[in-house]
Each structure stands twice: as structure tokens, then as C-alpha cells.
Length: 259
Length: 296
Image 1 (cartoon, helix red, strand yellow):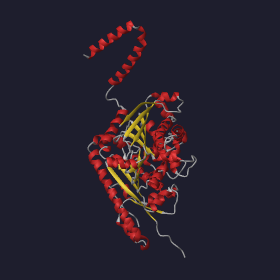
Image 2 (tube, rainbow over the protein chains, first blue to last red):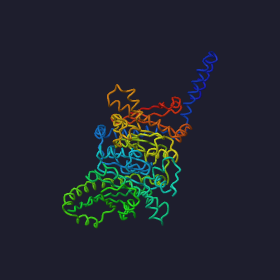
Image 3 (cartoon, chains in turn orange, brown):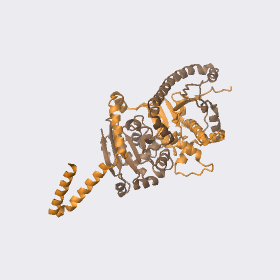
Image 4 (cartoon, chains in turn red, green):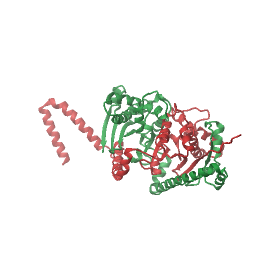
């Protein structure tokens, strides 16, 4: 049935073009368009279509989440008041919305390579500084959590930078060098360990370096002293399905006054 | 007095390491700026530390101790909740799909890089339903992409990794409604004002502000901000082309650049793709787009 209609249609077109030759170029253009469309339709259905993927994802979210929680989403449309500022790695496997089930409105989230917090520097690191400033001063988050993870490519990159400091990348090695103190510590203290074990240790030590770097931001220091913000480190091990969480504690001891 | 709220969910040799070493070695290297405060880190609760805390002069600790206990309890509650959420993820997703997660633990091969805002309401995993392994995600204030020439930053380190190492096929920049960062950009009076981090950062989007002021100055401020939110996505798309290894791949057709706008007031999503050839013809001053879609 399909091919009969196709042959009839082609026959009718041929007849028309033999009567009116000047329609040839118009017909050619239209046939090219039809051919292209049919090529797309006939294309391998397993070929990845990025737009379709995003569309399906959004419509699923709208139907299953947005429309089922109208109160939550209409409140969120007016403003956000997350209790958390989270630093997580850009790695596709470690989104805190999955592993810790953060819902919309709960966590102001920064994601970068190896979940690093650089020290205070308005010129070099204004991006991270802007996020911390916004979260602490404007959103008034109560917790800052830095989450590292297993098999982190950024940490491996840091551990692989040669001792002479030569770099092969435009930006990556420069960025991961923020946590060089973690590398130094691991290299000097974990000499018996394999490279892979050293990397795992470095993933955790780097979280601590980042926590320490948070203190170089005066507004973070002030909030921690006032106890309005708590700092925590974490490590997600996706090889073994484990999650560790720890505190950064802080104390001001009484000052000594000599009479 | 130390506020202790340890909630270690698994044992790890490093967790029990003596805490002060971390900062001890850092201070020796001189990497961390000195302040007038002493830092104590504790990874595990142990009665030794608690007892030490209670030996402190009572005058300073009694009132504070009350506060710290209250804080500790509410901190504990939330982190207990976090523990339950992780364990639920582990049993419902991780263990249910263990083959998939084992494969992922060996390597990631995401097809997307997504640049989204840090805003708590716009996580791409939520709004676009991305699953573990699907997208390499950068989140910063106002989903901005600085130019190649602006020097090293967290965003371009991530771009370099995603494009050159992971070889993603698509970069999607997702902007959104009511963006505080864009609002701060639009509110800035003096562009040289670097009194705050926020202002020093959002200036990356200044071309978007200029074009908004040029074309939409008749609109009220809120609508101008909405206009700027979308212009900023296009400005960032153009900034992506300033990276030679990005432009090369776009030219070859192995990398596509897309913009997306999530309106969480109406719950709609608009998506478009950069038409490289068209934008080049226009001298890369203006984004020419194709394949525009609107989902609602």
C-alpha cells in the first residue's frame, strides 16, 4: 500500500514536470527537503538525541514533582532559604541531589573540579567567593558542607603533577593546585601506600584544606564565631557505597589579661 | 567548649587520625593565612575531648555550653536525616542497580556538560531528571562562563576537563528566573565596584547587561532582569567559543552548544542551540540560534 502510493505519486510528479519544465528547480528543492526529513526519521533509533533527553527529563519533573507539590513550588518561586551551602565535585556520579536526596530549595550548591574552596582572593577566585558571600551573607545558610569522593579525577590530576611543577593543561592543574598542601601531607606521611591509596587519602585531606580555606573569608569566620554557621567535611565512596561526614570544630579560648 | 556532632556512617582509618596534624602541617607550610583564632578539628566523638571541654573556666562555657548543646541537637537531627537519605539512596538506587553503579565506579562517560546556577531551586538533576553518570555539572553564581582570556578560574578548569578529557558531546548552559546574581549585575551602578565578591564575579556578564539596557530599557526592572537572564546565557555561549579547543570541536560538528532557560514561576523550559555557522558570519558578536523549543 505504501509503495504503491509512492510510485503513483512519483508518476504524477514526473508527468507534471514533463508538462511544466520550469517547475523543475522548485520540485528539486522540495524533494531534497523530504529526503533529509526521511533520513532523520529512518536514522538509528538508538542514536542519542540530547534534546529529546532534556525534554523527557523536564516534562517528567513537571508532572511528577512540580504539579504534585504546588505549595512548595509556589513558595520557592517567591524566594529561597536553603539551610546548606554545599561544595561538590562536577563529576557526573556524585550529585548531592541524588546521593543525599536534596530537594529544590534545600541546598545552594557549588560544583567544580574536585570540590575545592580556594583561599580568599578577589582577583583570581571571585566565582567561588561570590557563592560563599551570597550564601553566608544573603541567604544566611546554617551549614557549609564540602563533599569529596572516590576516584576523583581532579585529585588524581593533582597527585600526578610532576615535582618540577610543569603543567600540561591550560587551567586544570592551576586549579587543582589549590589543594597542594593535601598532596604534600599525603606524599610525606603515606609513603608506604600505593598511588591509588594515596589518592584516596588526598581526597579526604583536600576536603580539610578546603574547610581551612573557608576561614580565610572574613564573613565565614565571623559567622562561625557567632555560631550561626557550622562547617562539615564529607567523603562519598561510590566503589563501596559509603558516606563519611565529619565536623570542623572551632573554639575561642578565654584571653589572658595581664594586669 | 567544643560542639561535637559526629555522625560517621562508616569506619575509615583516616577518620580517627589525630586532628590537629592537618592544620599543624598546613601552618608549617604557611599556606593558610594566620588568624587570631585557634582551630580544633575533631573527626570522631570521644569522651576525652568532652571532658576537656568541661574543664574550661565555667564563666565562659556555661552559657555557651547550653547554646552549643542546642545547636548540636538540631545539627544532629538534620545530619541524622542526611544519614537516612544516604542509606535510602543506597538501598533504593545504588544496590538496586549495582551493575550500573559498578560500571560507573570504573569510569564516567557523560554526554553532557551542564553549567547551571548554584541557586537551590535549579539543580539540573531535579529539573531535567539527570541520573548519575549523565552530566558533568558546574554550578556557579548566575551560570556564567568567563572568556578564555580572563585567565584560570574554576569554570574554565571544568570546561577543559569536560571537553578535552571526557570529550562530552553537548554543553548546556541553564539560566533561570529570579536569578539573584543577574539582579545584582543589573543593579550595579559602578562597574568598577569590586567591594564585594558578588560584584567582582557577575561583571563577567556585563555584555548581557549592556545589550539589555540597549534593547529593553523601556521595560520595568523585573522584566529587564528576565531579559538579562536570557541574554547572559547567550553571552556565555559566545564566551565558550573563545576557547580554542571548544571552537575547534564545534566547527568539526562533534560538540554542540545549547542554551536553556528554566522559569520556575510558570514551570516552563525554553531550549535553543547555537548555530555556529550563522554566529561566525555575524562576527561572533551575536548568537544566532536554531532548533528553539519551548516546553510547558
